[in-house]
Amino acid sequence: MDELSHRARAVLRAIAAGRAEVTLSREPDLRVDGLLCSDQAVARQLAHAGLLRPAPSGGHGQWSPAELTPAGRALLA
Image 1: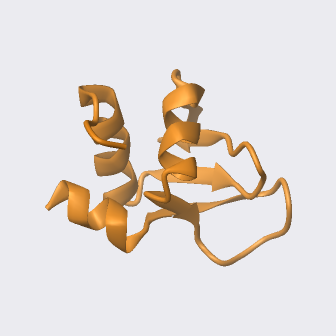
Image 2 (image 1 turned 180 degrees about the horizontal axis):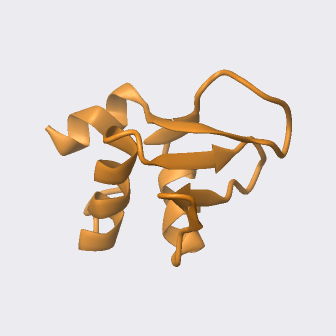
């Protein structure tokens, strides 16, 4: 992703703060503070861009804590 929207940056900050969960799937869903993210398209774009991932736990389709990848951390730095 060349340029991130304010919403995409807010999603990355929520993940960095440990407030988000993501499903382990091809098209991941994202929850922030226990609520579904209102912009799943942004969440999926960030995942497909390699900026976030589920923490290693659970199985396919299950909720797992979301974490930033090194590329995601670099974008927020």
